[in-house]
Image (cartoon, rainbow, N blue to C red; front, side):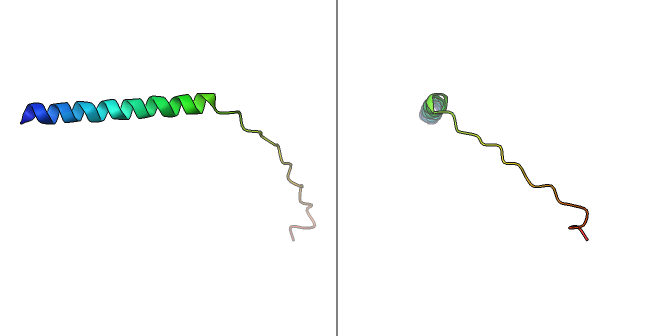
Length: 49
């Protein structure tokens, strides 16, 4: 009974490790996102009143 539970736990851990590695590969091979800098207008002291 314990051996069966241990084997199932080991299979679950190995499945999670494989999924993590696959996702890491997808992340590493993904193209870099294009970043844009957006400037915000500066408010005048008159506009704050």
